[in-house]
Image 1 (cartoon, one colour):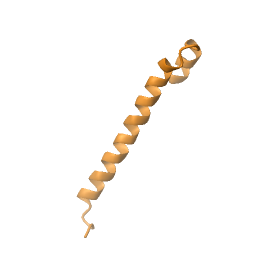
Image 2 (tube, helix red, strand yellow):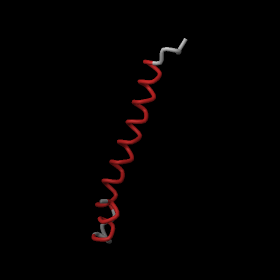
Image 3 (cartoon, helix red, strand yellow):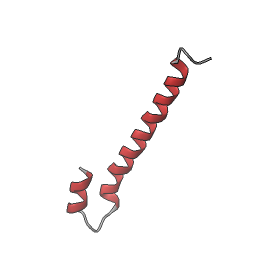
Image 4 (cartoon, helix red, strand yellow):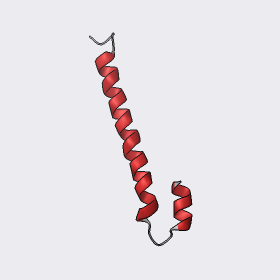
Amino acid sequence: MVSEGTQVISDQWWAPAAPGFAILIASFGFNVLSDGLRDILDARHG
């Protein structure tokens, strides 16, 4: 979707960049959440 957006909208770079940043923030958030859950639920954790 981001790739197709860059081909259609060439002079407005922020329009296809918005979904890219949303994907980046969502993946970072899920990564931080999963690390936190692993730390909390780890049975071997002292």
